[in-house]
Length: 438
Image (cartoon, rainbow, N blue to C red):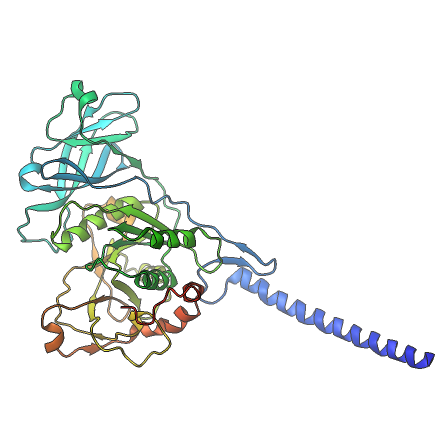
């Protein structure tokens, strides 16, 4: 019997030794592959940097503080409103405002420094216009307000008004706008989207999830939301996601109040105002910015990320201060396409756009630092074969019913990436993705 026991132990020892050698060989092979991933990166991986060999997520978020300065629409006088103020140039303050033509000619400005009374500055203004408001007769329009000063100090606040008396400052009810002095160096090659309120206010959470999920997938690092009345629970959920140390996504989510003082004002003016604030707010913090609404999606036809597209333009010596994107309108009342199944996002159900449905507001990708540093802005068109903007909206009037649409399934190339994304799975588990959401 002892011989049998000894033989069995010997066989067990040999099997264990062979298994150990085989395991060690496979372990070394796997470790080598993981080390290669650590050094070169995984294909198309953008969301996080992960040290695979140590199983530790090296995850960092940009500390760009895009919520500064605190902004809201303030009524200064009749037909004179101001939203935000910045200090990006030496001895000049920039602000985003709204005024009537009758009031703008009488505006003055005063600059505040530490421990001093306000000092009268030199006021000037330029209408905010991206080419959509030309020859339109508006009672009110957006303006860049400028206030120049001579003191060799950093200002802390600015006032805009039509009458100024420094002796009455203590009793003056004119609001003081806090200033944000922007950094002087650009260290990032990231992208941001400033989100314009939708044309239809009753927006569902599933639409917000779709927008953030899709644009996070194409490399947008920062979302700046101009809040028209989004439920707190919605914003809180995305803030929670952005602050989590998840290795699957990396973005900031900033919410700014948008208590716009007028109803029924032309939508192009609102877009221009938000675009102006977006450029100042992201100056020397984000390299590429674009202002679009929750209903609009940037669809890349070839590239995986937005910054990859911009880098290729730069490498090809096709650099510009801003890049114009073509847009197409996809009417949401069209019948769902059967081409894509097991998907809950509207963007993967509507593949027909209608060329004659008006959508005349230009959409630009801005090189922030270049745009605000130059007086003459060079614009380059991005070819439709590289990128477009899909606008999903309910089409009013008879255009939808009388026109033959054009099919475009370009966005469907992202279906599998969306469905396999951790963000999609996270919300799907929470039953937040409504299968019949519109």
